[in-house]
Every structure is written in C-alpha cells, then in structure tokens.
Image 1 (spheres, protein in one colour):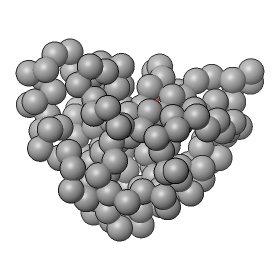
Image 2 (cartoon, rainbow, N blue to C red):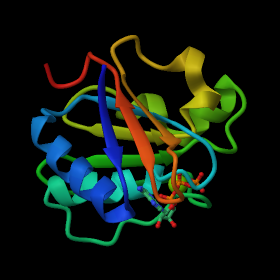
Image 3 (tube, rainbow, N blue to C red):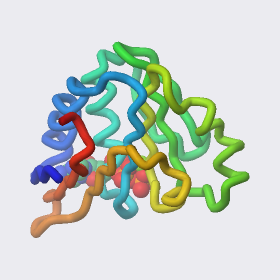
Image 4 (cartoon, protein in one colour):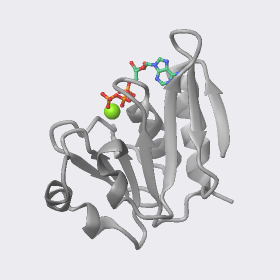
Length: 142
Ligand SMILES: Nc1ncnc2c1ncn2[C@@H]1O[C@H](COP(=O)(O)OP(=O)(O)OP(=O)(O)O)[C@@H](O)[C@H]1O
Ligand SMILES: [Mg+2]
C-alpha cells in the first residue's frame, strides 16, 4: 500500500500524472471514495500522464468516456450501476485486457465484479478542506 497526501486538486492531478508513467496497459484502476472527493481530478491527471490532450469530463451521464493516448483510457462512472446486468450494458467487460487502462469511479458499486488484480485507489478527506489521502494498493506498479 502506498499513501500520498494531497493538499490541492492540482497536487492530486500532478500525482496521478506521474503515476500514469508506470501503466503498461491492461490495468483496472478501481476508485473508491465518496461524492466529490477527487476521483475525476485523479483521472484528469492520469489522462495527462498518458498524453491525452482532449478534455476529460466526468462520465456522469454517458457512463463511459474513451480517450486515445499512449494507451487507451476508458473512464467509467459506476454511480448508477447496481447489478451485473447494468455493468454488462456499460461494456465494462469488453474493455478488459489488451492495452486499455480502465478507470472506474464508484467501484463500491461493482466490488464483487472487479478483477482480482485490479489496482484499488481509495481517496478520502484529510484534516483540512483541500486535504486528501490517496491510498493505492500494493498490486500497483511494483
Ligand atoms: N486535494 C484535492 N484533490 C482533489 N480534489 C480536490 C482537492 N482539494 C479540493 N478538491 C476539489 O474537490 C472536487 C473534486 O471533484 P471531483 O469531480 O474530482 O470528485 P469526484 O470524486 O470525481 O466526484 P463524484 O463523486 O461526483 O464523481 C473538485 O472541486 C476539486 O477542486
Ligand atoms: Mg467523478
């Protein structure tokens, strides 16, 4: 488990941008953490780190956004997903494997369907308003 303490959205993005360097493709990044904690901010940084130039926005309504970069980034919002059928209909399983980097916000909702080797990224609030604790499980990036 590695832990990073961020004190601003910019720091979170920067951390995620650097984290992206270790991705080889095929990873599932499972994000945990409540409303507005910074999951999308992290994915924005990730996209930058994967040399994605288009603007990353939350897939709140589309459920999934796809970006082309050094590796394809598939960004899911699982907020409204509550069962396996829902998850199938997002196309989640079609994107597993090959080169894709999958980033799934609200992974709380798909816990039992996540691959065993997924990288868990848990973001929580710290002491001050803009403080966030980012915990990444040890499967990630050696
Ligand atoms: N250290 C920090 N890291 C990330 N975001 C921060 C931080 N401090 C403040 N923020 C603010 O918190 C908000 C995070 O929003 P963001 O959309 O990334 O959260 P989210 O977890 O994706 O929310 P949702 O649950 O709606 O998907 C932004 O307004 C951002 O500016
Ligand atoms: Mg979000």
